[in-house]
Image (cartoon, rainbow, N blue to C red; front, side):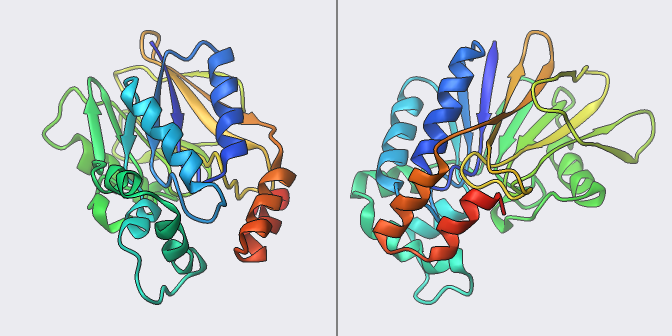
Length: 251
C-alpha cells in the first residue's frame, strides 16, 4: 500500500489540493494527515472539510498544536500563530471544531507510528530537529513496542530522515525529492515529512511524502502550487502580511 503523508497544511487550500493531486498521480491508496491542518492560512473551513472527507474514506488524521489552539484559543497568544487562533476558531463550524478536538495525538498501525511532534510527551509539542531530539522521540515510540520500526511526523517544516543502525547513535540524512529510500525493518527510522502549506527551507514548493508499506520505501516530494493565490487569500482575510509574504519566500 502507498500511504501519502501530509503535515502542517496550515489552512493552505492551494498547497493541500496540489499535494493530494500529486499523490494520486504517484498511486497513493491512502492518506495520513499529521497535524496542523489549520493556523496561518486563510482557508481553514475548506481545508478541515476536505480532511473530514478524507477521514471518512479511511485516512489517518492526528492533532497538531495549531489544531488544539483553534479549538480553545488563548486570549492573548505569545506568538503570531497563536494570535490567529481566535480568528480560525470563529471561521470553523461547531462540527469542524469538534472534529479537531477529537483527533488523537498519535496513531499506531503495524510497524508505523504517526504523530505531529515528538513521541516523547506528544502533548508538549517538542520539536524533532536534530539527532538528540530524534533519539528521544524514537526511544519513546519504540519502548515496549518491538514491532514498531517507522516513526513519521511533521511540526518542524523540514524534510529529514534519521535512522539507527548497529549502535545507539542516530544518523541524519537529507533526502532528495522524488528518490525512493529503502527503510528496512532491521533498523529503526524516524522521518519529518515537511510542511505542505508553509515550507521554511527557502523553497516555496509544498512538501509531502509517500511510504510504500509493501516495499518499505519512503519517497519525499516537492510540489509546485499557486502560492500567489494562497497569499492573496490571506490578505483578503485581513491576516498578518507576514503570513502571505513568507509563502513566496519559503520561510
